[in-house]
Image 1: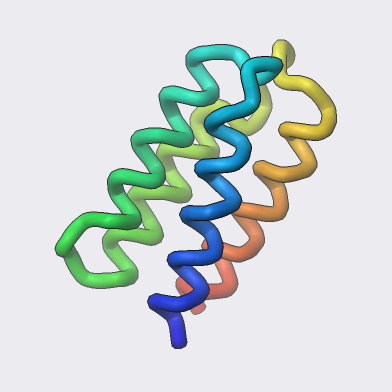
Image 2: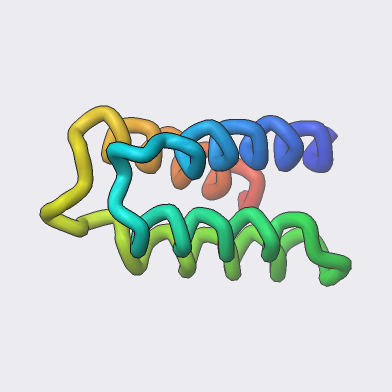
Length: 83
């Protein structure tokens, strides 16, 4: 069940990652988070690493508002898996 949720989150990240209105540094962090989620470590380790990567840019002032909303959605979904 959790792996299915992770796959859905990866889809959300991919969509946002392809949005050219999102600054490169944020897309880079999203790409890193996606790769962490696809890794072979234990699920909680992958999720924590992805949250860390995304949180590092979540307050970037150059982020468009729609992207900020999607990032909060992604972080919320990741946090729900951690529990």
